[in-house]
Image (cartoon, rainbow, N blue to C red; front, side, top):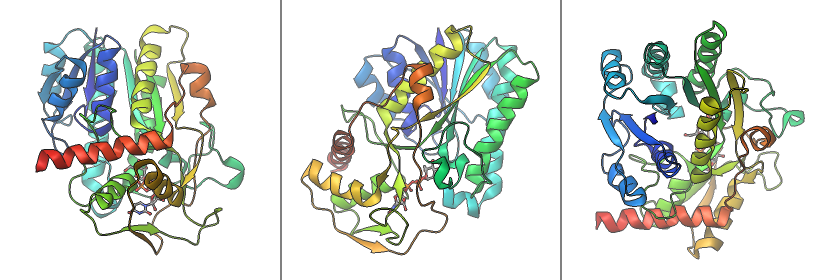
Amino acid sequence: MAILVTGGTGYIGSHTVVELQQAGYDVVIIDNLSNSRIEVLDGITRITGKRPHFEQLDCCDKAALQEVFARYPDIEGIIHFAAFKAVGESVEKPLPYYRNNLVSLINLLELMPEYGVRGLIFSSSCTVYGQPTAEHLPVTEASPIQPALSPYGNTKQINEDIIRYYIGSGAPVKSVILRYFNPIGAHPSAEIGELPIGVPQNLIPYVTQTAAGIRKELRIFGNDYSTPDRTCIRDYIYVVDLAKAHVKAMDRVLHTPEAEPIEVFNIGTGHGVSTLEVVETFERATGVKLPWSYAPRREGDIEQIWGNVDKAAKVLGWRAEANLDDVLRSAWHWQQRLQEQES
Ligand code: UD1
């Protein structure tokens, strides 16, 4: 049985391909390489001993997608990662975000029944909750969805609705929507990890690049929030744990007849960690001193969010396992590996 992974050479995609292969699935990757490198396939192959099938194409190209389904008739499930994901960029260029993120999903959904593909796992985000009020922290899957703060976040909300209405119309498809909190870290082998292009926007790549001397100093955005140490709070989830959640979700849509046609799960650790705690933990876990200073708040940042992940534990039998020290060490080892490769 084969699983189609769109965006499979990307950060979360590549870690998920590894876990799928190790669980015995055959994997077909589709990626247009707009934000990833073909060498990721070598990293995956070194870990698993098996090279995934790879098709370079854009999921907005329906005819090309159709050919892939025709060429691999054993595809039974899809994990759809391929999407633009930079929050700030989406505010500057909304239309490419809507086109790319919506058309890809619609194409896949249209083709699924035609090719007998039964299950879809969709990458959503805790961004759909906006800034939850105090009584909704930690957020559960039933917490209110709030107006999106960016076109990126809006595409996640709209895509969730598209899947919901499509399945509600009686389409012969089952779906699990995973709402990720903040994925971080790299595979313990340091063969794959996050590959930010240009100056990283996300915290952990900025931390590891600063520790490596590529960036002069980390700026912690905001020290006047209403949190215990005045910095923002997030739920940082190890990317390998997150990848494993996808395997559980795929098993559920394909092999659990009693599962509802559409199910939503928070995928996080269940714990909030402040930006300052991340910095201190990184220094302790790696022994590397990190130059940092406080800077003004970053526009659009929410103050604090972390997830209630009991539903994933109960229904999927999944829980985050890694501890933050190990996860930050994995990110640092990956950064060191990248530098070895470049020198
Ligand atoms: C954002 C999106 C999220 C998306 C994720 C992946 C929102 C509300 N969140 O998460 O949906 O899935 O990006 O791209 O749209 N920080 C610093 N200094 C830095 C970088 C970050 O202090 O140089 C702080 C931020 O202020 C934040 C925390 O670190 O408090 C995490 O930031 P980041 O890694 O960018 O993720 P989010 O903004 O939480």
